[in-house]
Amino acid sequence: MTILTRRRFTALASALAGASVLSPHVVRAQTRPRLVIIGGGFGGASAARFARLQFPQVDVTLIEPKTTFVTCPYGNLVLEGARTLPQISHSYDRLKARGVNLVHDWADAIDPATRTIRLRGGTALSYDKLILSPGIAIRWGALAGYDEAAAEVFPHAWVPGSGEQTTLLRRQLEALPDGGVFGMAIPANPFRCPPGPYERISMVASYLKKHKPRAKILALDAKEAFSKQNLFQDAWTELYPGLIEWVPSNRDGRVVRVDPREKVLETEFGTRHRVDVANVIPPQSAAKIAIDAGLANETGWVPVNPRTFEATRAQHIHVIGDANVGQPMPKSGYIANSTSKQAVASAVALLEGREPPASPVYFNTCYSHVADDYGISVVGVFRPGETGFVETPNSGGVSPRGPLAERREQRRLEALYADAWYASIVEDAFG
Amino acid sequence: MSTPRIRLPASARIGDTVEIRTLIDHPMETGLRRDERGQPIARNMLIRFEARANGEQVFAADLANGASANPTLTFNLRATGEMSIETVWIAESGARFTARGRLTLRS
Image 1 (tube, rainbow over the protein chains, first blue to last red):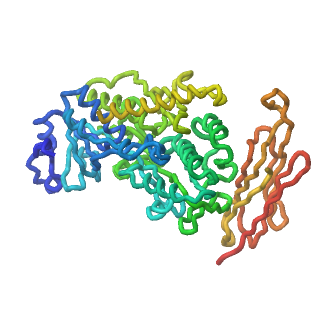
Image 2: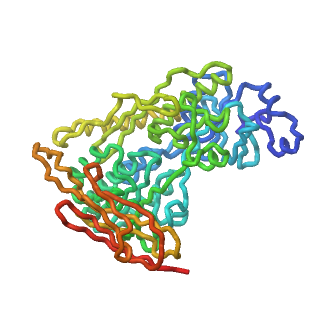
């Protein structure tokens, strides 16, 4: 915190009272232009690191309440027991060593008109350009019966926090009787990490096969189709026969109500499924700060310029990661990382009166584990279109299908590539 | 297979518009597809849906090759009193799959 001098702060209270000693204009005139980043996940951390490496002429501040970031990727391996929480937890020390100003506080509100951020600790921070990478919020109550208390019985384990939800679900899995039912409620699109629920089904199945072979997974889905579906279902048939029942929406799979007391997941047509443990992945929106700042549209996500990531509803705020309207790009850590660089380069260019980089390409690679030594992947290549994002034709794709007997080596290698992918993206964000 | 489902509000007031949702597990095979060995898959289609309230037809639809597997139909109905709702999916073979629901009144 010593890096932040008084000159870099404007006290919001005194500014509102009209008694400010230093107006934001004067602050900007006296220091390097200030790039502020809210959110230290893959998007925000990558943005901070990239800005520090590429643009020494700007001052870079990252606002993130936690001092350790627990990744969503590989969380399902923690659930299965193949990894531990410390192995997927990362500190901000190396970003700090690169000269990023770390502010461990909650950003509570943004005022786009005065370019000011109010921090929970009571101070305020002004910015010239803001990179907002706040992630998702769970829409509590959007699924009847699913509130914060219900999440203590039916964990979502979808927003890692400090790992509490993943740990809770892991404990429930350990306490599940052999012969018990592990229920899942999977939401409609869009949501964070499209293949995530299906990797979770796979890794829970991997755990059950080893420890509780008579238990069963009942996965109730609000969709009819999902990411890497053929590859997942092939693997389920070969590795976990009879262990997984996946029910799509057109077979009454959409969960419309949960009852944690009775341990029931109720679907659209009134079927009440009794479960022993349930993982409820609830409907989501952009994080609260983005919605409070008026950046989101009626869908609950933030529309952005596909070339600069500037919010269409506010100037000087570039919104990256899961919070924006990125379709057909997935809400993934990799997309957050890939797009953060264009957002930062655009913000700095606009700050200096230059044109943002003209022809960006955004990449996505998502590996999923379906067993410890069995990986599958999807690659997507995207570019800005007239109004949104466009997948580049004849690019990307998924791992080839085929019987395990023929593909064993490929699946084993992809599990190793996944480890390398994880190490690389963590390095590019937090290193 | 061929389990028809129906969902409607448990109760309504007279004059309310209520939403009736229906769904059936059915492959809706057109007869045009082939299996992995290249053999044609036999045609097996639902061709009509009918809904009755207290015995009187209130909604009907003809289905054709474009209908998806596991078709779902949702329609609205004005509550005019207590209603017994009956929905029937009719296969080309003549087989009928019926689901029933009841709408009660509240004040």
